[in-house]
Amino acid sequence: MQMFFSVLLLVSALAVIISVLLQEGSGGGLGASMGGSSAPASMWGKSGGKTKESILQKATMISAAIFIISALVLAAK
Image: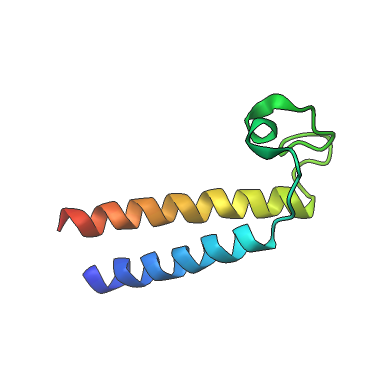
């Protein structure tokens, strides 16, 4: 079981790194990511989340959640 979560932690860490590096910079800084700008294509907007950026954002969030959960499980043992 510990080996499974260790491998899951490694794979999710690599997925977070790759998905973050593949994202393009918006140039808006931290304020734009917190809702400070009106981006034309939001994650759940008209495109339905089918753009490259929205797919990368979803992949980043999912892999980060898996990373956190597997790290907490490993720390509890």
